[in-house]
Image 1 (spheres, helix red, strand yellow):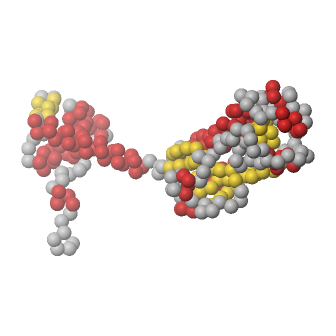
Image 2 (spheres, one colour; image 1 turned 90 degrees about the horizontal axis):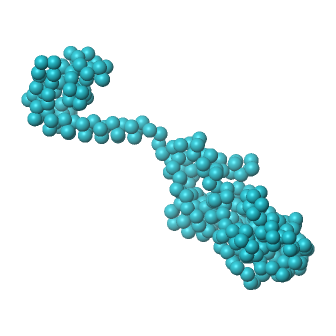
Image 3 (spheres, rainbow, N blue to C red; image 1 turned 135 degrees about the horizontal axis):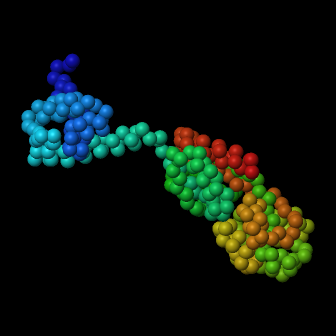
Amino acid sequence: MQAGFRPAAAMHDLPPLHTLPAFEAAARLGSFLAAAEALHLTPSAVSHRIRLLEEHLGQSLFERRHRAIALTAAGRRYLAVVRDTLLRLDEASAELRAPEKTRLRISAAPALGSKWLVSRVAAWQQQHPETEFSLGTATSLAPLLAGEADIGLRYGEEEWPGLLAWKLFEERVFPVCSPALAAQLHTPADLDKVRLLRHPLLSWQRWFAAAGVKHAEPKEGPLYEDALLMLEAAVAGHGVALMAETLAAPYLAEGRLSRPFAADCPDRSFYVVAPPAVQEKRGAMDFIRWLVRSAKAA
């Protein structure tokens, strides 16, 4: 042993630590016998530990009475500290024993988040209860570039400057509208008579070409940055929306929207995007790979 080194117990004059649970149990249960049963010890072992603690402290903690014990004034003061210490040790030990939590902050495009992602998060968490999610919605990349989100789900092209990207699925787009409005549309040329709902990432002109209609990109009509709002506007009969199949599918299945025409066309894709630092987070990478597999299996 190095000169001048003192063990921590001697330095702090700690009591023998195995005596403290015996003291707390005896004080709580009012009996050395009951404390022994609770701690799976013999009564003599409990009695010995408490005597050892009293000798260390230099004063009595209990008044021994006929078939009963009672805390002394010193014992009552000491009990408050011992209980708090044992509780804190128990909480700290439980936290260390518990599985390490994985915290994932996800920023999703609103429509994809509500119509596709939420159910996947629920399925993942059922199998991985140690994962804690924080979900938010955004259409820009700002939360990811600012380090406010670990993972993003966005609609776009192949290139994502400053971010890593994994393609979920390619999209095909087509017009959708309320069933009542769809009944009035017989050919794509009839779209000249109705309001067209627009989204900055969806090209009406591309769909017009696929449908054999020579129309330019419309410059008028409500412009929605949130596809979910545009879907709800179409349900309300506000006009005809050009929409990605993944987002329109739940509305079509429920009968809230209809496809007036069969023509569709390829468009951009949905991606999982993330800052490069995500590669150092095993839980995040596991979730990303699972999302990609889930998209391909759909």
